[in-house]
Image (cartoon, rainbow over all chains, first blue to last red; front, side, top):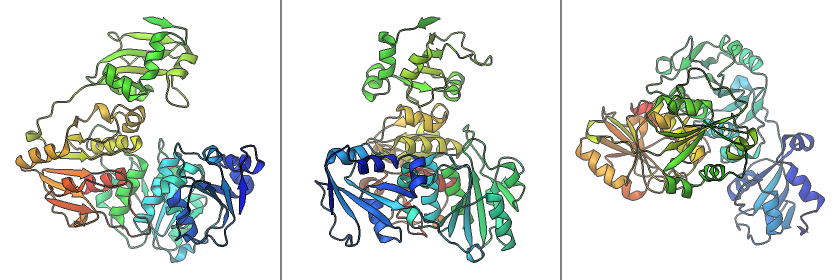
Length: 250
Length: 250
């Protein structure tokens, strides 16, 4: 167990930097905060480099932290490291990881094209996990998966569901070979999602908050779907749309 | 047209304060930002006390601002007033308003019990509008409707759909008298939402992010529904859940 009391300690400065993508990419690590997320990380295969605990906090006795490197810090330091307004006094530095998924064996996939809002990306991952989707493929142009707000919004689902980073046109070619039905989402040249022929094995693509799914990808799908808008709103939030479609298609 | 160049101008200080609930309550006004929201406000019945425009900005010629009090400010002032990281250079001070809705004539209602996250409240209002819901009733314990983040997340739907603030047990008693079917959402003593008997005239209640709908309200419903969780996530985001249920029930 280590103890750090100075806010100027270089280790503290480095941990704080993990709120930037640059530092996360450089170190291959990311930071998570709060009891729920740290508990989920401890239950899963993710490597925890450092468990950081505020001196006023007692860890739950149910946590198995025997083999985890523990650092006790002052409350001031914890506040300094934290990205949230009210820190719970617990954080962890985890190693980024790549999930190996054999796409020929999965039944239900969600593909994300350039989802840029961290809260949206996290909520979509949480929704995909809840809907029993086998894996999520995050395409280029999406916000960094290891952004603190993304992880917070997943509510731990980031540790439950395999997430693959890949070029989406590459993914679509592969999964079509495996006989999966590929659904895009679009307002043009699309059918009402309730008319979609539900398939046992499918992939759904949802897209960028402003521009939707890229036309090139929409041209590769088997069918494009839209959710009818009955009121004056122009569109639905992308995470809400993903939830409606995933729960309908599954 | 007025022009303000000093950041210390008392008017600027007062506008900035509108990011606090206290000042909004005191003045009965609220602030909106960005082209889309201001355009929606101009199209609707809401009273605009001040339209604030950064000196570098040309207003769209399609906007009818003849009768609106206009103030030109420096970019520095606009940045200072703004709640967002990158201001679009347009903001407006609007009057809070109460919508009169005759609940005996509406068919589809959404009731919100203590929804506390501004992004969630706004996204739910946007979703309710898109789903063609007639009105939203916001119960006690919910975040302030005029919070900037709520308004931003509605994407303008706050100006499209009637929103009533009311004690929910009071609302439920009324709408049951009008023969509406009232659905709660709960994990206990509830049925799978896909088994719900869809009614032409219904009210759905969704609840607080952590605690769900208050048990007292759940006891007053005709039927409580749950959305099955197929993965390891414990629950769905409340806005996503509202979207799945509203699109299924309508």
